[in-house]
Amino acid sequence: MERLGRKWGRAKLPKLGWVTFRWSRPLGGEIRSATVSRKGGHWFVSFLVNDQATTPEQHAMPDTVAGIDWGVKTAAVTSDGEFFDRPFITAGETARCRRLQQQLARTTKGSANRAKVRAHMNKIMGRVAGRRADFCAVTAAHLTAKNAFVVLEDLKTRSMTASASGTLAEPGSRVARYTGTRVVKVNPAYTSQRCSACGFVTGGNRESQAVFRCKAAGCGHTAHADVNAAINIRHAAGHAVSACGDLGNSRSVKQEPVSRATGRTPT
Image (cartoon, rainbow, N blue to C red; front, side):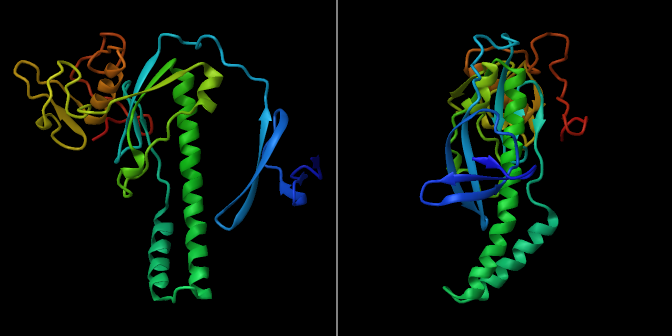
């Protein structure tokens, strides 16, 4: 492989010969292999490199733990009250996709026009997929940098609703290995119905998508429903926290979490 300039390079690939590509980022290590793929009508080449990095024996903050609740309205919520979300498709792209779907319904299977419409749709969805992948990578990096232990629900994500605004991909070993974070899965059963303060379980505890109010006599704990679920997910891994999700007792058990994005209490 060799550089052709600041933005361009070329690599000699088996059966393909010399292939020119746009050099989008530094490789940062010795090249071990290359993979060619096609997405949204474009060709990509990715390189596997040995960056000589080793996993730390211990995380920089070894006592930090976070439970993560994957949501529909919000992509991910932590037991510390952090909310992670972003729009993956714009209003204009949504309208454009709707028009393209109508055009697709009027085309003939196997026709050139149908192929053109599908290509336009794939281009839009390719941008959406790219934004989603970027969001997942940035969020995973943030979570593993802050926590030595990350607890996730063992969900069957393929069966989750396609209308969801987006669910967080698991912080994979490619991120966690740089910080020494341990990532584990727990059974998600009843995490959204169980009170994180007293342990009482009933479907009536979750009054709405956002509001959790314990119906147990003498409890009455209230919280954002997703934060309450995230705390239960953390509990499931054997790490107890206070009712608000923090490690101390300085906050009231009635206090609502604050959104990282807006600085306001979620509703």
